[in-house]
Image 1 (cartoon, rainbow, N blue to C red):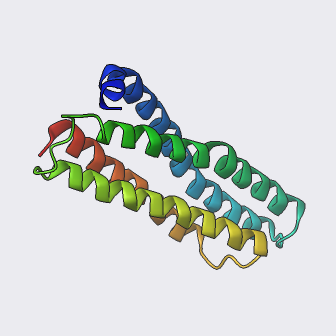
Image 2: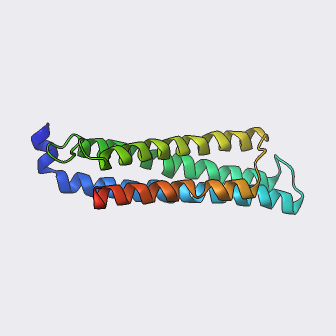
Image 3: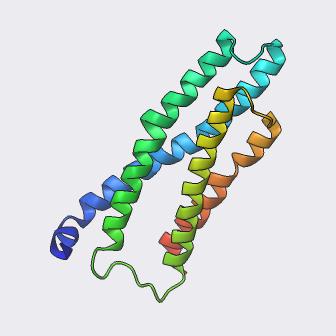
Length: 154
């Protein structure tokens, strides 16, 4: 298995980077959709279950099911392939631990978005557009930690 991973390192790394870009795009956009969802309904004076609410729910479902979920699975699969490639990761350094913790936090954020989407479906969202704007910074901070730890390898 180690030979396969080592021989296909550049392909695996490429697929990992492509998956990460897709995953991050979704993680950046979903909180934005939530902002528009909350503020659009409030601005229009529209209630849950309205045509506008259902349109936002549809967009959020597609983003989660068609982009974010598959991209996260691919990111994890190709990332673990890289972790198990012989000689690639030196676990005695800090950077792989920082990256691992940040990826786990990113995965938690992904699930947090899914939980928030279920609240919209149930008509029980209590968060404001401002709160979703603040949460939109979480993937940015985690991305910065991940990129610096992998590139600089501190």
